[in-house]
Amino acid sequence: MNLNGKKVAILGCGRSGISAARLALAKGAADACIFDANPKAVCSDPAIRCCPGATESDARAYAANLVVISPGIEADIPWTLSFCCAGAPLIGETELAYHYYGGRIIAITGTNGKTTTTALIEHILTQAGHSAKACGNYGYPLSEVALSDPAPEFAVLEISSFQLETIVNFRPEVAIWLNFAPDHMDRYRSVDDYYNAKRRLFENMSADQYAIVREGEQLPGLVPRRIGFSSVTGSGQLYYQDGCIMERGQVLIPLRGTAMEQAHNAENTMAATLACRAVGLSDDAIAAGVRDFCPPGHRCETVAEIDGVLWLNDSKSTNLHSTEAAVRSQTRPIILIAGGKDKGLDYHAINPMLAQKARLCICFGQIADQLIDTFSPVCRSLRCETVDEAVALAHRNAQRGDVVLFSPGTSSFDQFSGYVQRGECFRNAVRRTLNL
Image (tube, rainbow, N blue to C red):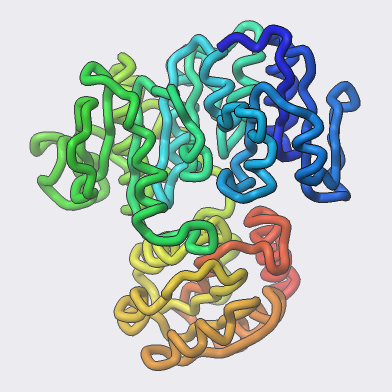
């Protein structure tokens, strides 16, 4: 990609947009200007031009030679397309960075587990003596990694359907597909549209590259070499049994006593193991990295255990599939706290599991009424407005032996800036309520 003398319009004033503008200027662009429809948008880098409150008229007046879109902005809306009025191609920040990063890419997608798997692969590679950087949806934008001097040997890229919508030539050496379940129905017209966006991860890959895929996933016709993993005994090259990752009937990596011993994290560990093998690491090096890995926060993490009640923070749960996995992994009676922004999801699928495992569901936020209507036929359900109120209700109703599981099952933007702030709110509410 030759940017010499070109005008580059960057859409979106977030971290990826700023990094894309820096990269474009570093690679010879005559101008790189960030445009944002939000009139209050602020660019944190004074060296980068920014146009907050940008209109379609501003887009036409700029007459860009290339348009680079941030993942949070839809590619097919009139505002975005107005920047392409003179025939400028539209690509994503990931695609731009791909052309200038010369290292090896391991890319991870899936509805759930992406961040944990990305962080684990970065940790294993680093522990084994390789330079690696987690990037994409977790860590740094890939553009920032491409600007590094020296650039790391590996970019471990968490990549979402939003980013995959706008790839052209992007091709990782190893691609991981963790799982698929309906999500982002507030963005996509159908589940098929969401699936097709995620499947683009493999479209430029060749037969000498690797697709690491959970067994049972519907991905016919893949060109790269497909290697499977599963939580079901005997299914896939690697599988999970009795607290261990197994291969051909033999223990490969014991997970008991590690942070990854629950079944959903065992799947993430198997995917990471196969990816690290594919790029040349030994099983001993992989096992050493797994043993001392500490997952990112807000993923079924223990906040407290007081008076026989366990309080778990799973704020990273932003869809039904992740809440279902969290509920499935519990062995104690559950008080589930769920709710947040309406993403257009149908929550009835979790009812059979709630009927078996949950004593009480506490529903909060924008979709509280919807969740009450959904869950109350199978489980006693209570409504409240805030996380603080939900914690107080859980405390009043909890009994010795219960687990209070904060697993919202949707995004947090009705009340919070993101899942991290939401998780911190839950932690703080628990600590105040329990006088910790």
